[in-house]
Length: 370
Image (cartoon, rainbow, N blue to C red; front, side, top):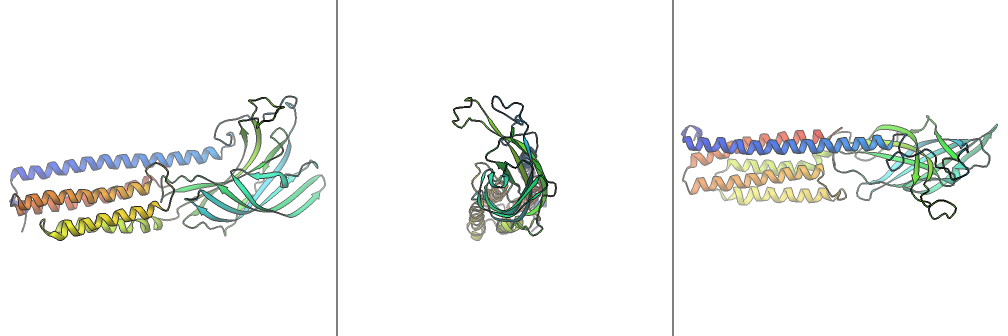
């Protein structure tokens, strides 16, 4: 049966109006998704750039390079050259907000009173082990090499998961000498081993920064003013990891895509076929919900809609639209006894919803990708 030629004028107008309504709502949804994911990408990039900017403090605000206490304004800090070589990154957990590193750290300095290899800390982390590998003097210069294992706490930005990227920063800071006493300089030979593998990610960028890090408290020291801010020199080695391909993305959503396809194919069944609404469409909806639940266990709850939430929401919304369409089509089929109009309504919605779903599933993740 060819449904379209037999349609009445008011039925054609209804199909045109329905198509324009769904298309306009979908265009608004696509624009909103694109804008939000673009903003998330821009915000993540800005945070990473600010983190490695040498003129910013550890909390992202601009601070003085030195905050000496009274009487030490003219002190000249001792320079200490710092370098690292990251040999292994392991136990990275988005849910646990933590990652671990196995790395070499070396220090070169001239003041014999200093021992920077024994007094440095990993900011926002914990040194699990520190082993002195080599220590020697070359003229007035002192050199020490350490093998270090550390655990670093990091709040991962998962708003673009699973098209996310993250900057892992290894930040070293002296625990004894402030920046008016000791200042770090970066050894440009710092690097990361080619053996470093992070499951699901690839190292895309490496960077080094030296910056001040201020603590906005006197920490109860009675000799210091209440508003005193201790400032330390900080060495930061940053590693940007990003998704190397779309494999993870499609693996996560293959069940959702299959559910949506089944729901759309149900439109080719007759409107009064019990297996259409009560079987295929309802089954697709529960499969989509189950897929969304499984994905939600992979990341912590950021309190906002992630890319994964958006993609799952789009899928379940489309299945919901198919459900509404099927109810309308069933009403036309049984109450109006117009099989041709019901069939035409199903065909129009199949191609319309399929085109919209494909478009939004291409545009949205691309907007979130580097």
